[in-house]
Image (cartoon, rainbow, N blue to C red):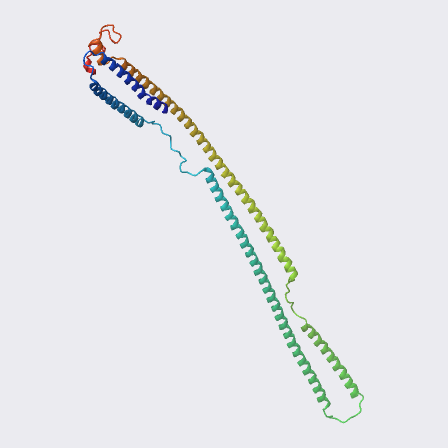
Length: 377
């Protein structure tokens, strides 16, 4: 376009040159005029009028050319950029990465809080079970003490009853002996062949001793049978504090092992999920990069096609400008080569002679077959 403008700007100089030549030709024709020659004012007026007309024509030409350049525009327009106003791919990737890291951090914090809560609940359950066990042991000890005290009281009450019966028996026996000894004799003493009183008393005492001995043996057997407990209190084996501590430590160890196993499984599952999520994210990123690459290639192809088309259009415009300039120069040349009316009037007459070098037709007319000069004046 700049080249065509430069070419267009060279036209006024050419026109000015032609105007100077025309002036020279007019002056030469006027010099050859046989009539009045001292008509400078008249010629100056005519020249000024012609100059004004030329200037007006030149202004109209340049105005028309400017209007033509302003109105005639390329109809091809670039498609709108689909990524205009959008964020870059790197910003979206960074935002998704930050969001994923935030979600993982929140999940990890929730998991750590859950572990702490589980540990606290486990400690509370252990303390509750220990307290419950202590309470059961205290209740069992209290029941054992109460049963022992009640049994001891019962045995004490029975032993007191046995002693009272034994004392009553011995009192009765002493009273019976005193009563027998205090009986008065009912018959005079006589000598008979039977056993004497001492022998009878000895026999009676031996029999009584035998009876008392048998009674005492029977009483002792009964007392022994009564003294032996008829039932055995149920005994429950209770762990010692050391054993209880070992059991608690073992349970805690097993619980921690289970908790560590669950934690390891959860960590493994979490890593697998993170790996899957990372793979999916990388697949999306690869797909996005491929789409961006394809879009860039498509836009480059479109830009290359546009540049080629613009180059073709520019070449066509330059060709049209060149042809227009050549046609305009040819037109100027043809117009410049034609004789002026004053030249026709002063030098050649109204009609050219046949075969004259300035004539353009065989009929002798400059303007063709019988064309009148007044039509062009």
